[in-house]
Length: 126
Image 1 (cartoon, one colour):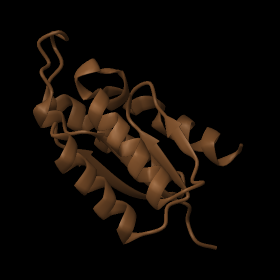
Image 2 (cartoon, rainbow, N blue to C red; image 1 turned 90 degrees about the vertical axis):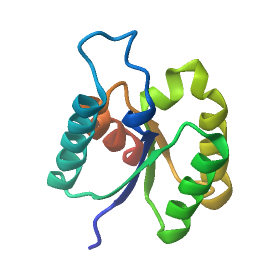
Image 3 (cartoon, rainbow, N blue to C red; image 1 turned 180 degrees about the vertical axis):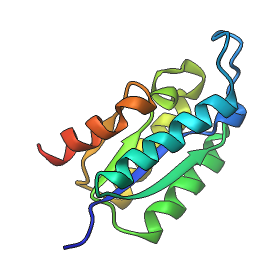
Image 4 (cartoon, rainbow, N blue to C red; image 1 turned 45 degrees about the horizontal axis):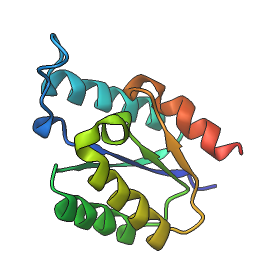
């Protein structure tokens, strides 16, 4: 039996302004995202990560390229992309790309990288 395929989509930590969150930085977030990816793999998932830039058109292109490369069983969209007002347009483009290219695929949303595995499991058991 094939492993369930997960596409994780999030904003690239390198473009985030961390000044509102003292003590957090791009390297720390990258490490947390990598830990989430490892947790998914250890739980038996085939994972593809797509970290998008802070440009809506470029983000849309990146997501469409990933979605065109494989069929995914679930798409997880990170909280940083969804909850930051400056990324609303990018979030809209991402959701619309998924809806267009992978109609019907379950979407799930984490609260942080540490809740990604739970979010994916929720999506696959609906």
